[in-house]
Length: 395
Image (tube, rainbow, N blue to C red; front, side):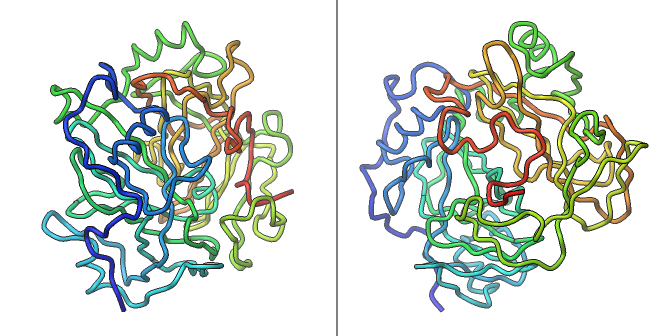
């Protein structure tokens, strides 16, 4: 069994970046737009082993691609400060799987680590944060980014130089993936010298209220509590007779690269609205639900759904938390897009009621507006959405 080295050569490497010049990034700080991600590619801060594909660069993020092999591991892990992922794989990997050609099936309930086609050579002022793509979350594929010498998932430290890995664990359905499949995405944040030790970049509730007065963040009056509060929609008056979906236990395999290929009825059970506006979450079951509010993300902001807040109940909400600039946004503020929520209850049954608080969105400023917003690209599959399954299914 062969294992990836900690610094595999990239076929498409460019010159090593040196000093940052104002012409590359300007004088602004915050999340980087697609045009600045292209600058990072041009300067070799992002090093793909295969050329970047059309549609891979999103308004405020870069889709990451699986490499040519996956390693089934006994358990999820982090390498820690002194070790690389490759060193950990020597002890924990039990099987090597080729993802070339038509790829391979990753079995439900198993954990895999996959080297990605992209590696990084970041400046100290630029860090990264990753999340599953929306379609990945709606398939209940638990996906996290790992770097060498780290103690946390989904975070890339400023100045990091090395490979990237995805931990992949299908939870509801076994899935077919292949080299080049895109399961997660990364955002890049540029910090100034006073922000190197800052961890929270979220806009304050006061800032959000001022922004809402100029550009609506949500239909109706916003409810703010360390971010924009979202409530669950469980009433037929809001969504129609079907107010959610629950994943079936025993289904076929889903190919993550096939769009509109599977009848929803063979993978999902419809959840119909009850007169009392309630839904009891069963422990371990996976649900697709929707927010009562319609969200509008202005062009100069990006947002992220908080994955879990213990004060709200014993459940996790939204495995795929990135909301790009332009999501649900129009100049008039209408109609907006509902937040589709991936929900799993923990340990005990839990009762949700219509308009109960389900989560919150935290907002962060872009360093500049993207030249193309969400909804203006062919890969904007969920613009204007209400309750909606992933792009792989049809009703």
